[in-house]
Structures are given as structure tokens and as C-alpha cells.
View 1 (cartoon, rainbow, N blue to C red):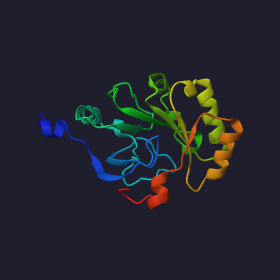
View 2 (tube, helix red, strand yellow):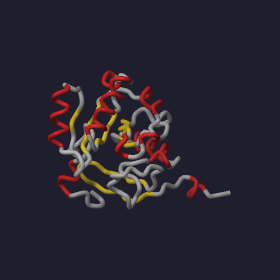
View 3 (cartoon, rainbow, N blue to C red):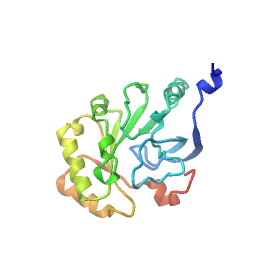
View 4 (cartoon, rainbow, N blue to C red):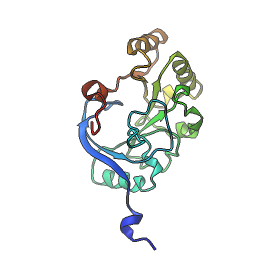
Length: 195
């Protein structure tokens, strides 16, 4: 029988203090716990060294007790997840940032659409977009699933693939109730490890 230490362990790539680069918490000093392992292989993954990018912590079952312990300790906790795994067991005090994968990611087939029904106004739905096709797909998904009424929605361009000004113009032209965002950490530190 494995000892308690091994049963309760997590594979951690890094823990670091930095500025939050995404979500409505952008710009806030934040402690990041980057877990190792992600079942997805998005074509634009920016942390292949960990195969997680705030990434897929739910791939490790002991992520849930960690989230619970951090909330119990009084911390403001957010979880960035790909949306490919069930978010239903995440402590309700955790803000869930669900990153639905657009077709350009190569992983859209793995989206768990049932997660949308679990989102609350405290959560956020994020789309990283590489093209006009990704944008149209995201807008359609938001309308079909009535996401705009459920929680904040974030649109972000894939760095080097979609011109940020073009994405901003599409959002304005369509009068979408979304938050446009750039990945601030890439602007500040060019995606350096531990940032």
C-alpha cells in the first residue's frame, strides 16, 4: 500500500510569483502553481516544457484537495483549465477559467461542452483564436450556448498568428460583450519560464 505522502502528491513544474497575464485578474501580483502534464497538445502551446499552461491541472486528481486547502487558508484562488475535463468537483470558491479550444488549436474535439452548464458569473470562458475561422466558431458557440448571459467571456489572439488589432476590430464591429486580452506576461517577459 503506498504511503500517504505518495497518495497526496502532485507533479509540479514550477511555483513562482509574477504578474497575472490573463483573465479579469490581469495585472495583479499572483503566485502561480504550474503542474506538470496535459492530455492536450494544442499547436500553439507556450509551455511545452511542462505540457501545461496554467494548463490542465485537473489531469492530476490531487489538484482538487490542493484547491480546497488554498481556499480554506483564505486565498483567492483561480484555476485555468482547458475544459476537456469535468470541472464539476472543483471547490465552488475557486474561479474557474475555462479555455475552450477553437479548431485552430487542433484540439477542439476534446472540448467538454457539459462544463458550460456548470459556469457561474464568478467563472470565465476564454477563447484563444488564431484566425477568422476560429473567431467565427467562438462567436457561434457563445450564441448557441448562451454563454454571454452566463459568465464573462475572454477573446485572445494567438501571438504571431492573429493580429491583435484585427481581433479587436472584429469584436467592435460585431459589438460583442467580450473582454479582449493580450497575454501580458508575453508582452513583459517574452514568455520566459517562471513568468
